[in-house]
Image (cartoon, rainbow, N blue to C red; front, side):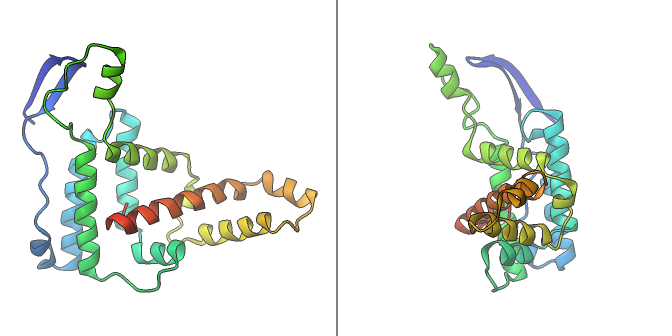
Length: 213
C-alpha cells in the first residue's frame, strides 16, 4: 500500500496514494452468477476494513457486520418486516443497492481533499476535522451493533423485531398495570424497542438513498 505522510494544518496526515479497491460496474456484476457477484462485492467491502474509522475495535465490528450481512442477511425479509414492503427487490435491484452502498462506505473512508484547509482558531480545527456525513452514519451503525445483544444480531428471521413491536404496542396502550411495567423494565425487551426504532430509521435511509446498510 503506497502512502504519504506529512504534517498538515490540522496535525499528522497519512494519505493512501492509490485506490485500494475498485468495484466493477454494475452491468459487469450482473453478468456474473448471483453467488459470484455477491462474493466479488464482499471482497471489495472487506478491502476497506483498515480505512473504516480509526479504532481497532471498529475495524473488527465492521468485519463482523459485513460477514453477517453477506452470509446470513436477507435484505428483502428485513425490508418486509421493518417497512412492511411486500414487493421483493430483484437480484439486479440488490446489486445496484450493494454498489451504491459500497460507494457510501468508500466515501466514509476518504478525506474531502488531500490537504485540509488552513486553520487559525479552535473552531477552524473542529471544522477541518469534522467527519463526512457517511463517516458519522457508519460510526453510529457500528456503535449500535456493538451494543446489541448476540441474539438480536444473529436472528436472521427478525423475530426479535416482531417481539419488540408487540412490547412497544403493549407499553403504548396505556392498559398495563404498574407491576407489568416494572417487569418489562427489568428485561431486555424494553432495550430492543429502542433497537426496533433505530432499525426503522436505518431502513428509511436505505429506501431514500437506494442503499442496503
